[in-house]
Length: 492
Image: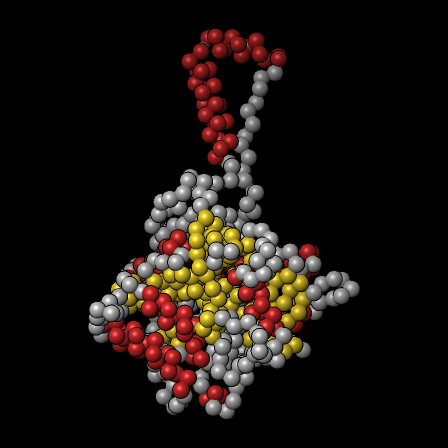
């Protein structure tokens, strides 16, 4: 049975130490006689009480921010780390925005930059690989060229050379299936271009997949987002992610999550281990890393993961990261995801899973937060999803000051593009509020948080900034661009 989410205690919920009792006046003379008769016992009792009060009071306090595991900083680490982070996205061919609309580095360009900058190592966590368009033999489309070019660069790694040194490429992928045989990675492994391991989530959880999309280069740079290792993710599917460059502290932290995938891919054991300190982190929801982002914004950041058994000591669960982001919103929550269900949908019978849905309802009803959901609609969408979206939308009321709006994003498709399987969809997985930017790799149904691997990046602005352009504002502008585009349609 998939593991269910159990909300954690609030940060302020700490245990209280027991108070010591004082003898009354009626008993004081008798006690003094006993103390005189047995002074060593009294001294031992007094020492024990002192130790309990001294150490007990400190034990029950909230844990301070600890020193980073890799060294540096003080015990209460307030170091600020430089990090260049930018949004990257894939805009499908034929999806055209008006002049002046926000535009960012493409996923293809971001991956090219990572390959260009790699000197020693490249680690990739992926769901599946179809960069060569081998799964679409009947489709003759020039939009496959970018994927083919990326794959060629991977395959050429078997040779190396003076200008292109051979990299240590490691790929942790979800276990291949008849639907996703991963012929690309078989070819890379057989030619010595990369070392590949497959992670069987059914072995550990009874279901689920490795759904993470992650690149890590030289422990300095990384990509995290919605784009699979698929040619369609570059030209036929709308994707959103981030490219972090010259960001070693955050990169080393996300590398610990990849290290878990690599361990599971190598392991013959059928159970998740108790992750030791090599996998743990000091940076989380209650103790974030302080980042100087793009030299203009101070942000608190941390990486979250799912499912809970893959969250090593100190790691915030991805669901908790999402819930805390919603709960901390003051004026608005904007969400763009492919699927939204308050259910566990994969299995013999659906199961109710209300955590995110409840958080959105609380935000709108109790705090007056304006909620906007931009959910994808394509030929693989399940119409039953509308029932749950409609129940949220029904709360919208000007009289009650409840503001919930929902739209469907539809990527336009012509007759030729219609022949491309599993293309033409808004595949984004992000959320932005008045202070926080969240970018993840999971769709929003329960399965992705109970038995499927994913990662989220949470970046919170620590104070109001005079800068008109920040990473968070960029993400807000993307949402507003899409929300107000002709491709967004009211749920009705």
